[in-house]
Image (cartoon, rainbow, N blue to C red; front, side):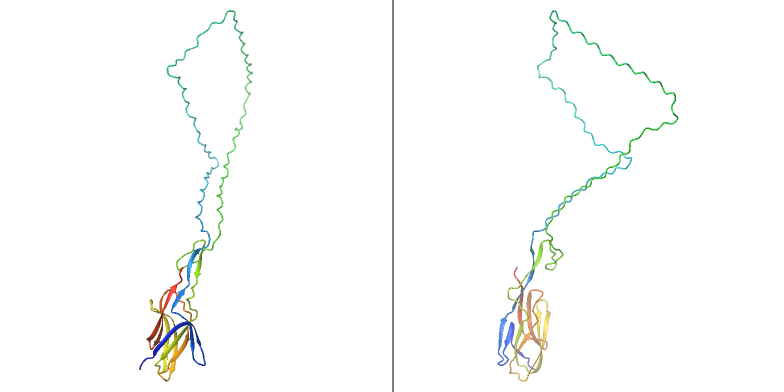
Length: 274
């Protein structure tokens, strides 16, 4: 039995049909789809690197009864020797001079009298059997350690984190995911226009969209056509679901009859330019 003949397979945005005359207007024929893509854009100033933390202050704990360590004393530098006299100059003693005639030396001052020694107090008659010990100095309590508070970090605008951009790409502070829309070459819920002939009686067809690179089926639509005369031409308008492949590549809209491909339309899917 001869198989049906596919005369036309068109993918379009809209197909208008006049019910009285059977005429059709096909608008928006396409075989290329541009997908929107998601990109990461820096929307604000990048977060600067964290400031280094100030070192912890040195705190020394002194227990009660423990000696307080003394600060190291600074020794005075050794005395410098006197500057020697210039070479060739010899110091000489001053010669004694005779006083002039009639000179009388001034009377010498008497030495001051020493204060009389105080009388020694008589020894005590007797000492008590028990004497109080001398008072002891109170122990030095350790001072509380001084905590040094580091300066507060500068405030920066807060950005939400944890969002994800393209697969496997974590976002940094200040970044956002923007979606670039397609530039007009996109499909909403398109239509497929089919023109068949050589159909003898009832026949079943399958209209499917497949990924040629992976040989996987995205969707399918089962059709049933009954034509008594194989010389007649059968026209059909088939509504399709939105064509939104997950990956760019080459796809095909195929028409099958008894698991045999009668014809196909290649569809190119590309990503929008960034």
